[in-house]
Length: 436
Image (cartoon, rainbow, N blue to C red; front, side, top):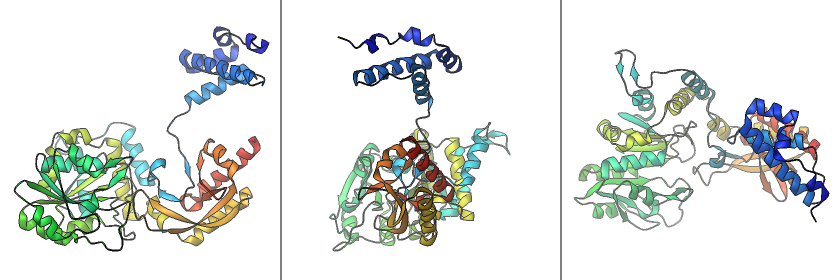
């Protein structure tokens, strides 16, 4: 027989008639109140069947409504030690980028208006001068991400023709997306050369023919090949491309514009002779999601006029954030570069303050660049070690704190926390313990 407590639960209509629930409905609408009431009753039934009291239904409705109204995309404290963390939104934006977003988004803008001439302008003109200065290229174009930049370049330059690429560079770029798949969607035909570990200039030269349009080099961003390995320099490939009249496209992936390990820079690629260089805006550049193509003006113009460009173009907020990011590079105020280059002693001091505030223990650890960049690089770091039981409630708290679980402990790596964020993390730990 059904427990009496279940029979005593009110109907949805009766619960909606409660004064507190009616107030919630007035504030947030019938749809939210109805969904919250139904969810509260469903949870109450589960509690009763499990042998627990249902609790105060009105409070349950308010809690369910708060959960429904809470934004799904939320700010998170990154205590993983991975600087460019794809799952956590990659690069945190510089202050200059946030300021530009606010200024451009709060009203109208001259996105496609030439203010001087009073006629229609192009959204591509806003960032091209800054990107030319940054890369040394003749022109540049911004689209919505680097995979899109590569897709557009191949579609505009090699549709129906051949693209030559080394077998050792047919990488997977994340979430199952692979270079051969991107290339196939462009309408170009893939021609593989060399072997997995060794490809020479003559391998490329033998593959070039009348149908060849592009010689593609892809940076092995998320892995390194060591030992019995060989690949030609970019200058060697550029010389071959010039001799044979084909376009050399260099896909850099992260595209570090500031010196960082052995990551290649767009400027170095342009100087070495690449006709087009593609790289990301939200990795080591430290800005918003974007794909940037820089190189020879006539080639960039072909990309700009291709029909696919409209589907891949960046919107005003991406452009504003990228403009602010480029400005931040002039002053050195780019968060990902600060985190990557911060002295270990400063990281340790932050970990010690966090450990003192939480009763944790300072442990030495290793941070990573992430985002497919510098996979072998290890950044000396320090973390605050806490009981592993705190991992889930901290992740579900406000703000969520995401660390790493290692050796049955939760580590909050302080290389990817600012001083202010470390204080927030300490407060989150205190609240979590008080609620347990």
